[in-house]
Amino acid sequence: MASFDDISTRLLEALHGRVAFLRKHRTPFTIAASVIFLVGLVWSFQKLNLSLSDLDIWPALGLFFVMAPLGILYGAIGLMILVHIAGGTKINLAESVKITAYAQLAESLPLPGGAIVRTAALMKSGVKTTKSVGLVVATAILWISMAALGAGGVLIAQGSVLGYALFGVGLLAVLPVITWIFKLSGVGITALIIFHRMVGVVMMAIRILLAFAIVKLAVSFETALFFTFANIAGSATSLAPAGLGVGEVFAAAMADLVKVLPATAFLAIALNRIIGLMSCASLVGFISLFESRFKKLSSMRNAS
Image 1 (tube, rainbow, N blue to C red):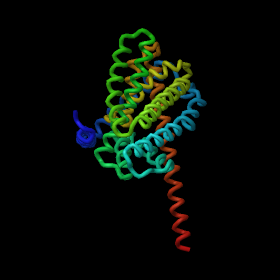
Image 2 (tube, rainbow, N blue to C red):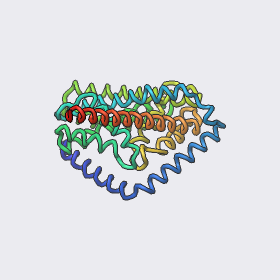
Image 3 (cartoon, rainbow, N blue to C red):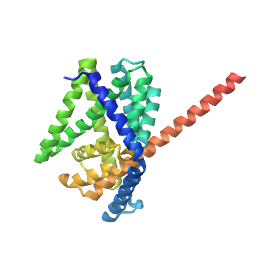
């Protein structure tokens, strides 16, 4: 069986190749994703006979000011756990929040920007490149596969055969990742990471609930959990900026399985993505402004 370092090296090579490919074809991917996204938005509004004034502002504000920032805090805690696992120099929460915010904003690029930023943060803390890549990719797989387990469980409860396939794929992906982490850090940290990812899936489901509430549709938590998989899988796709259009199309294609209109699913996932990126961009802007003023004050004090 291949060692952790061997697998990490292969992942690093694959990541380099993928980044080079995406950089070369950045413009057509971005244009295609933007066209799909915009056409999908127009189609959704027309299909549902909605206008912007029909959207509910309160869940949108909850998404922007509460859940999106909490998502960045959640990601920051996850990054701190990764640094601890890898044995790197510890980073404080404020620095981790900053890195996570920039990583989430980097995901709006048509390449694995978020993964690159997180890997660089681990390397800066003293973690070897191969281990950094391995941990970032492994936890990303864990993130997607746990969402698949949740979505599969929802379908199984509804008597859908597809649920067993989705649950099985998620389980097959979860087990090797958990084994890796266990070998690196032991039972305690492995349990902590599993719990952390479970909390993240629940938080994403709450975001999806709010996104559906924006279009004035009340869905059950189970339905929101189902669409969490589409959202996470779409975000993990680096062929388009932040998975733009991919998660939305995926959600629309799966919508009939939980008796939701495809147009409603597309619009809800799109609103969650747009508002989340806007909130993240605002936070990054605030951090940049704060740092700029802090440095200016420091230089003035040193000069005096």
